[in-house]
Image 1 (cartoon, helix red, strand yellow):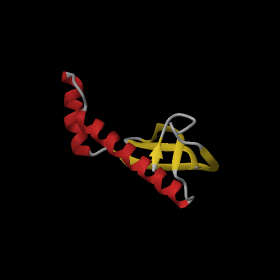
Image 2: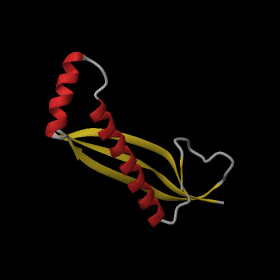
Image 3: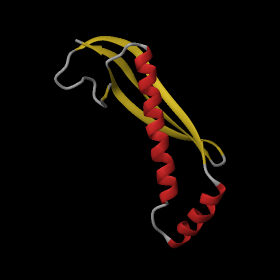
Length: 104
């Protein structure tokens, strides 16, 4: 399964557009991480635990988007986009979406 942020897959022709493929996940912070990250926030530097949390969430959202595209018998997903938003205090959603297509 190919994912691209462009309208086309380089070197390939799109045969059919199958609709929107999407995947999302909602992740919550960990109280223990909050304490250590609060200290890091005071002293400065990357909030590594949160970076890792969001990276894992992006990977999961992309994998769920791929599963959705596979369920449509897609070969690729074009115009892939990702968004994140706060859902609740300490929780965030990561959404991946794009157009599922078949290739010639």
